Image (cartoon, rainbow, N blue to C red; front, top):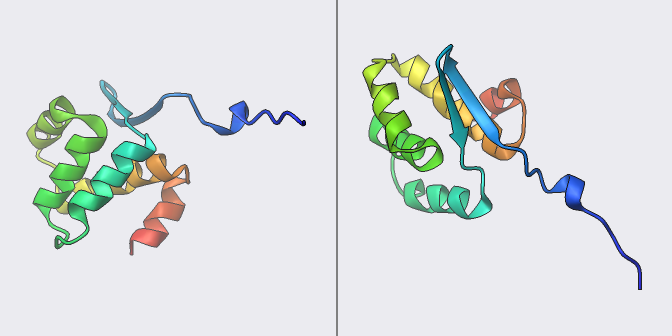
Length: 101
């Protein structure tokens, strides 16, 4: 029987998103979590509340609180969501931005 090593394909390194010099957050990129995010938002209109739910599920309650305190604009908040989606899907920001249109 052959043995196949796929350990290098499992992406075990920690994924992060940097919003400011002192604001770097670890992203929960697990399949379970991302499926929960998709399930939670699938029947909802895309709104600020949905974006906040995504942020909380992917980088946590503390990060969400700090992001709210930053008083981002709608385009700024959209950039956070695009970046989080890019990290979870393991694609470049620019590619996810094209998909997001």
